[in-house]
Image (cartoon, rainbow, N blue to C red; front, side, top):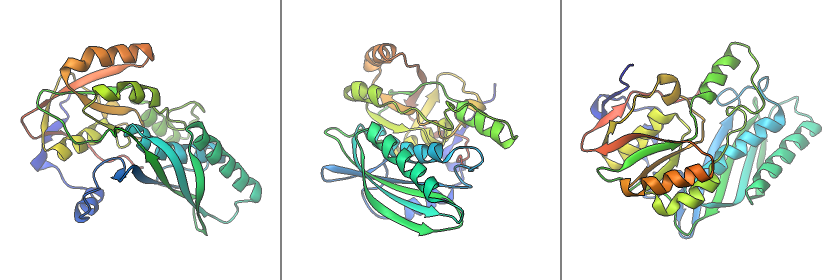
Length: 284
C-alpha cells in the first residue's frame, strides 16, 4: 500500500490557509472562537461547492447546512445555543420551497437544543447558506495541546461520503441515509469522552488534511501505526471526530466507544518530526 505522507516543508499552502494566516486575531485556530463564556463558529454551505440541488431535496440541503455548522460546536464539546442564518435565494424558489427550507433548519437545530434567532436573506444566483452558531462549554475541547507519545484516533467508519459523492458525479442515486446527505454527529461520545481527551476536531476536509491541520497547530509530527487507504483518508465531509489523547486513557475511551457501539480507530502516534499526509482540500 502507498505511503501518504511527506515533510511539512514540501507542502503547498492552500488559499484558505493563506487567508487564515494573514489574520492576526488570537481567537483563530479552532473549530470555533472562544470569546468569554461563548464559542462562535460559522460555515458556508454553497450550491455548486458543497451540493447540487438535483442531488438532494431542499429539506435535506437545509438539514445538512445546519448540521455541518452544529458539528463545530459538538467538536469543541459545546452546547449549541443560537444560530444566525443567511440565505441567498435564487429565482424560482417558491414560498413552499422557503417553508420547506425553514422547517428543516428549525427542526434540525431543535434536535440539538439550538434556536434560530435571526439572519438575513438576499436574492442571488444560487441557493447558498451562511450559518453562525453561538454555543457554550464549561470545558472546551480545542486543537491545542498535543504531546509527544499521544495517540491519534478517529471515530466511526470513513469513506462513505467520498464514495457516494463519486457516485453522484457519475449520475447514480445514493441512499437518503448516506453520510454525504445526512452526517451523524458524535455528541454523546464527546460528552462522555471529554475528560480523557487532549485535543479534538471534526473531520470536514478529510482525515489526511485535518490531521495535518492538527499537527501544524501544535508544530509536531506523527508516526503512522497503520496504513490508511486513499479513499478513507481523503473522504471529506464525514464529520466524524479526530481526537488526540494520552495513551493511558486508551482503555477508557475504547470502553466508551464500545458502550455507544461506535468504532474507534487508532492510526498514529505523535512524534518528534514534521511528517505530514499528502492531501488536497475536499470541495468539488
